[in-house]
Image (cartoon, rainbow, N blue to C red):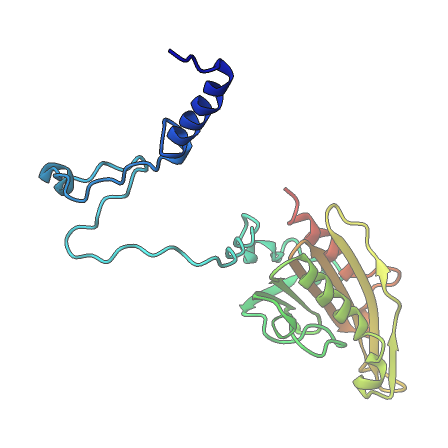
Length: 261
């Protein structure tokens, strides 16, 4: 019996091993995953009852009402202006508080109005015409009619509006002498008045014939506090005007006192 050499058997074994690997063997990467069967039975319960969502949903509207819409992104309205607790008329002086020219010349009567007329010899328009939301007026007169006083209180939309109106009122003084159209007109300088609250100013004016009696002397005052503005004028015959004293100045201080607290 002839025996083959062992060296010749090794190549044959390697050839058989490689052939088996190429034919499929057990390499998982070369074997595709089986496709899911299209004929697998589907549970009727699973198809009819979907799984509940993890995110909560709002309940459906009932009664046939339309679903609420998301509000538009609009600017929020401005809050209403905070007003002082007192009404407008509470800042009007009464006959006992309005300064008089003399003790023997008291105010005999008063009258109230809406305050839609200019106050003072130099004013071109009323507080309402220059932006006030509401105005009230009180007029005073002596028994002989020679002396009068008028006060108007106005409330403006805000403090800036009241400040601008006050500047306009004082600016009208500049050309007052030309507009009065009297043979003799004298308009004094604006003076600040120390007040307990807010700001106060006053100036005098006189006008009339060039000589003789018949002229008028006036004192115009202004008080501003926040969105409030009050004007006052005291007027009388030139011969009755007190020397060294302006009744409108005292009226300004008393009006300002009504805005405290």
